Length: 196
Image 1 (cartoon, rainbow, N blue to C red):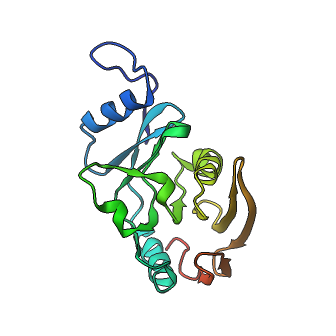
Image 2 (cartoon, rainbow, N blue to C red):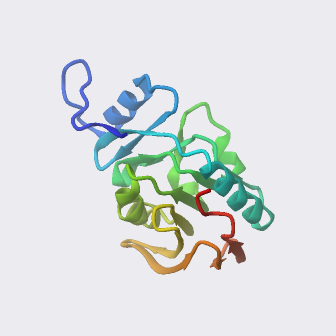
């Protein structure tokens, strides 16, 4: 289930800016088991991942961690990355950034600092994972976007960010190995990514 506030209001009036949406997002009382993001000018509340997604996220992190750029960390914690130029705020399933990004009291982290992001699709966010996030992450200069299509059981790695999104991508079915480009330059084994 996804709850979408088509036109969220602040004190009875429509928000005027992306900053208003961020303030509204901060004030939301999101139920346990849900996360909130700003997608296409709307605040979208969606359920947390299915249980087996944890295994997949852990496998990705374990494989990429030895290949992280210096002073970077990778996590699948619930953090909100902001992309003001696209008026988007995403809570990616997996993210890698330089450690200094977390040296803030704000809960709005710099999306342009990301060196890696991965999204595991769900029926509620799949469309944006396949389209809007490809464009936003690419325009922000995120070097690698890994899309784990849990419905189609395939992995796509996007690289070479540009003003239009990404210039390169490669797709493999779950169970095969996939090259993850710079700054990681490693191979991701997708064995164990399928649903139980």
